[in-house]
Image (cartoon, rainbow, N blue to C red; front, top):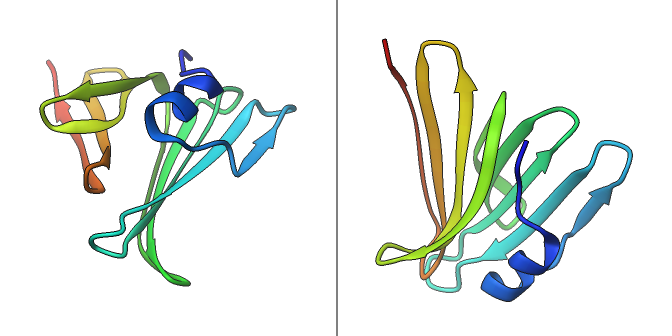
Length: 115
């Protein structure tokens, strides 16, 4: 699994890991959207090849989405904003998640047949 270094999250989004487990090479990052009041937590594990997004407001979860079979996680900065793009490796399926962290939190996640 390919994923960004910690300095990339700090450089692009000004955030450091809120959680790190070296035995699972597992990271969590949090970011708040001051406009909507939504917060996002993204977490991933190299050992488990997993990725999870948690959207929440205060103490209440709005949505939690997770998947295994992560192929790569990359940082993007384009016309849509700044965030992370996740590609999954499912046989016969194309699956990707675009998680925009700036200027507003936005999650787009899809799985489509590729055969």
